[in-house]
Length: 155
Image (tube, rainbow, N blue to C red):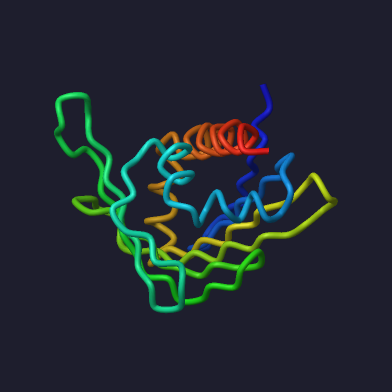
């Protein structure tokens, strides 16, 4: 089955571009990244903090069924333009991966369709390649599929 979220990673470079079209109006797609309750649902994580403003921050934490924390991520929002762009850092705690820089661009295709383009820059090409060796493509596709399903219920 073809993955709906596309990843373009050119050899030898330290960045990649992720694109996905959603059957959602632009405003709902943007809310999926900015409303803590919606983020928590489609990312299957606890949103400890989400300050949608320039120099705001965010922190996510995921626990297993026994309450053990298995994933923590945080970052700083550097640009916040409603329904247009979020520029932020992303850092996974207790991970060999350095912080990365993410440019999330939101675009309206029609009244009921929108597109997300994520330009992600890693510290080195090797770190980016290590990330791509993980089930990264499948994971982001699953997350985006959950985003679509979760927000469909809000329509």
